[in-house]
Image 1 (cartoon, rainbow, N blue to C red):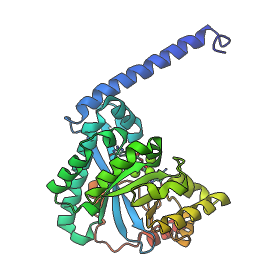
Image 2 (cartoon, helix red, strand yellow):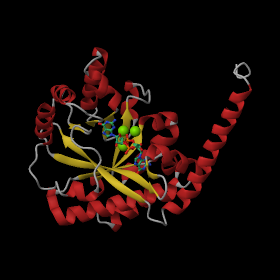
Image 3 (cartoon, rainbow, N blue to C red):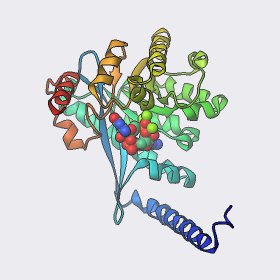
Length: 294
Ligand code: C2E
Ligand code: MG
Ligand code: MG
Ligand code: MG
């Protein structure tokens, strides 16, 4: 097939391949200096109680401001960090920086600050035999009660090798921290084996939330997941809520927590802390905003 496309296409192909490889190599080099140059920052996205409308938790999401290329999304650099092993240092920075900020907020704002901090961990971080010790050191250093920290692990990762990851999660959970299964619904775990996983929270992937309105099967699945989670005493966070119809459906199905652009995009430290203590009903406010703009 490639031959039929003619001579020129080889050149183009070679060139884009080379450009990609060069870009990749440069990214790798730049990642190495990014930590010492303070190029990472954390954004925080609200996790809202769908029942009370209160801001209950925050998910810390890393951002990289590259000196030439500007903002680079974690989806673009976390995989490179994973492959090169740089995720160790980056992940450690994220955990420590998020915990430090969280502790500071709790100190300044008391119970007006959200009670839960969610931090993502990736494959290589989980496989690091020192992770449990590192987590304990960090929460001790910042005097964070362990039950206030959630580590988020994607479903597809756990499913990739349950024999390896279940004991690791068990060990992490022994220190009292919470484990969230992230992007649930995309990793093909059978619902019947969910009870074998050491979990506290299911974060339902936004593809379910997105489709539930239009595709009846998705709404039924959502209902089944929520019933099961209830039986297993797991809390549920619906990810990627973007409109009030989705919100109303999730509320009707009894989903406890939600996250998504309807409430707020990930915010800077200053933006998010300016909202602590305000008695906003996030579910009310956003539906009003929604109707006002439509
Ligand atoms: P995630 O943990 O599933 O995080 C949710 C992602 O969805 C975030 O993207 C968030 O900005 C985005 N999002 C939230 N609400 C909505 C919505 O309503 N609609 C849409 N379309 N998107 C929404 P982000 O910040 O680009 O992060 C992407 C992924 O990168 C994360 O997915 C997580 O797997 C990974 N990641 C982010 N921060 C870290 C980190 O500190 N460490 C590690 N290891 N991974 C991280
Ligand atoms: Mg997450
Ligand atoms: Mg997710
Ligand atoms: Mg994700």
